[in-house]
Amino acid sequence: MKKLICLLATLGFVTSTALADQVTLKIEGMTCPAGCVSKVKTALSKVKGVTASQVEVGSAQVTYDAAKTKKEDLVAAVEKAGFTVTK
Image 1: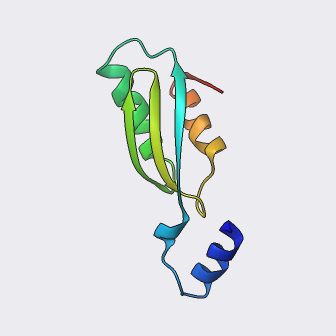
Image 2 (image 1 turned 180 degrees about the horizontal axis):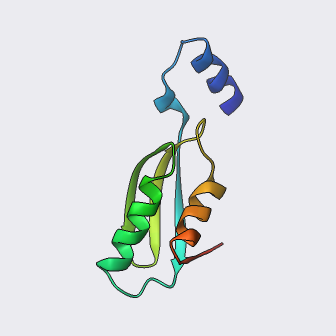
C-alpha cells in the first residue's frame, strides 16, 4: 500500500501527508520531566520528515513522513541525545 501511495504522490495525485506514519518509542533513562523531555523533543525535531512529537518521561509518540525518514532514524536521534530506546 505504501508503494502505491508513494507512486501516486510522485505522480502528483496525493499529498505527502498521506505518507505520514506514527510510532510510539519507549525510552529508558529519562529521569526528569523538564530537561529530559525537552532534550528528546529537540532531538526528534531535527530529524528530517518529523512533523509532530509528543514526549513524556518514558515515551515519545512521533508522526513522520515515511518518504523522508524511517523509525531507525528516530531511534538513532533519541540515542544520540543520550537515552535508550527499548523494543
